[in-house]
Structure formats: structure tokens, C-alpha cells
Image (tube, rainbow, N blue to C red):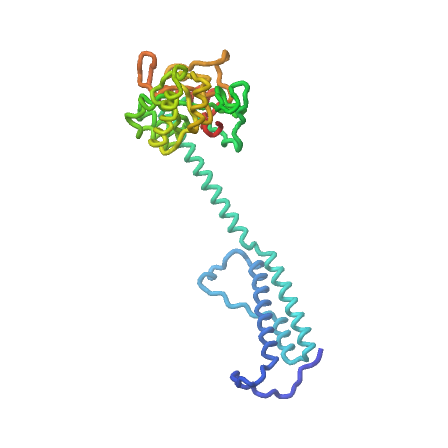
Amino acid sequence: MPTPSTAPRPRPRPRTRSAAAPARPGRHRRRGLAALTVLATLAVGCSALRTQDPSPAPDRAATPAAPAAPPADAQAAGAQAAGAAPAAQAQAQAQAKAQAQAQAQAALAAMPAARPQAATGQELNGRRSAAEHELALQQSLAAAHRWGLAALPLRPPAPPAVKPELADGPGVKRAPGLPPVVYRVPTTDKVVFLTVDDGAEKDPQFAAMAAELGVPMTAFLSDYLARSDYGYFRTLQAHGVTIDNHTLTHPDLRRLGPDALQREICGQQDRLQQETGTRPRLFRPPYGEYTEAALRTAASCGVTAFPLWNEEAFPDHLEWRYADQKFHPGDIVLTHFRAPAADWKGTMPDMLRRVVDAATAQGFAIARLEDYL
């Protein structure tokens, strides 16, 4: 490598120069060398941080750390390259740059970067999620205990991405061009569906119990019974209860002509849309009786299915359709908005408690009918 000249060098000129004076090529080289020196300094500093004693010295907090000095080899490279020939300077710059880059890459690879912070954030999020889950569980247990349930109700699975096909077969009756009549929803999920008819009794305790326990259900309303307080049913709707059609006056549809069918079915469609803001898709015929004319009339005003039922619930017992007296996947349970009476031995909360306890004991969850139908 050439030896720097020992002849005295002229004093540097002032930095200001005229616009016409050419820029000195050494100025850019010095800037490049300075940048390389800083990069090398940072690399060595990172390596020092990695290897230093992790336990703090007693006076470390009180004494500020001195700035790291540029490494000797970087200083020598800068001094030597300043007076070398252009080819030698380029070689020195390349060597210094390569060395600095290698040191910086090694230091960065060894440093933990942001991993501890990210891991800490994930751990905190996990703990927060677990705490929220535990709180929700405790609140659910407290609600179950407060309403006298034998056990915590089972949570239904996520709604199916595609609703079951309602083809003619067991549990479903279907004719071409007509809404299907469904006794049992074709599904293998261990779910049953709670439906409540008419609308005569408007028990606030029942509304509070259903909302607090999060029990999904469908209400099939007849206007002549519900009209005294549609606000009660709007409150149920605000807590997830779906409101559907059960005619205006609860007649036997087999005895009605075309005009009366239109008035009873489509008239209640209009009424419920006015009261709840939603036009029903489901229709339950009073007494479970219907005709082909009733099916066609209902289809003409927006009804897509006629859900009937498999079991009927009372405050003191359940009536079963099957000989084994057990729920089956997709069963529809019928009950009514009723007050205590000779044939209704208890309250609406008593009825709901019986249905939930029976379903839970048999390993079934209560799901939302409209998610499947």
C-alpha cells in the first residue's frame, strides 16, 4: 500500500466557494468515509451491548454512558484512504464498508430485536382473554344459579355456513312450488329449537330470564293477543328473539276461503312488519292445521317455511312425540305465552327452566331456529 506523503500540506481553504468553482472530489470521499465510520461504530456498539454484563453497576444510573469511540481499524482506514491514490481509496472504502456491514449484520442477527416485546404483548393478550372468559363463565354460572337451573346451559355450535336442505323426507313435507312444512330440522348438530306461540302473557320475569341466560327462541304471534303490548315483544326482539307469524285471530285455516286466508296470513305479515320493522319469513298455522291454499297464500306474501313441532313444553312437564321420550337433533319445541292456570301449572320462567334443564341433561343446546331454517 502506498505511503502517505510527508510534505507539508496547504491549509484548508474556507468552505465557501463561488458557484463557478468546481466541487472537490475529496469532499464526497470524506463524507463517504465518515458515514462508514459511523456505521462501523454502530455495529461495534451493538456487539458491545450484546456482550456486556447484564447486571447493572451500582453507579450506572447516575453516570451517563460515554459515547462509543470509533474502532481503531475504522479510524486507520479513514486516515489512510484520505491521502491515497483513487484506486487505493476505493479499495480501502470497500474493505471498510464490507467490515462494517459484516459487523452490523452479525450484531443485528444476535440482538433479540422486538421479539421479547411482541411475546410480552401476546402473553398479556392471552391473560386478558383468559380473564375475560373466566369472568363471563362466572357471570353465566351466577345467572344459572339465580334462575334455579340445575346446570349451566350448553352453548350452541356456530350457525351452519349453509342451511340444511329442506327436501321431502323424514321430518319435512314438501310439494313443488310450496313452502316446506318442517317438524324437525334435518341436522346432526345436537341442538333443539324453542318456539313460543300466541302472545297472551307478557311476563317481564320471563323476558329478563331469557335475556340474561341468552336463550334463543322464536315467537309466533297472533295479533289479537299480542296487540295490547307489542312493546314487550320488541324488547324480546332487541335481545335476539325472532318475531314470526301466527295469523291475526288464530283461526283453523282449513275452514277459510281465499279472501280470509289472505287477510289472516298476509294481514299479520303487514302488521308485524309495521310493529317490529321486519317482515316474517316463517309462519306457524294455528293448531298445526293447514291446506295447500294456505301454503300458497303464505308464499305469496313472503313466507318461506311452515315450522310445526315435535315436543310441547309446560311449566311442570314435557310432552314427547317419540316413544323414547328424548330430544333428537333438530327437534322443534312448542310452548305458549301463558299465565298460571288449571292446565298451566306454573309461570313462564318455570317453563323455560324445565326446557333448558331437560336439554342440558340430554347434552343438547338450544339454538336459533332461523340459523337453520
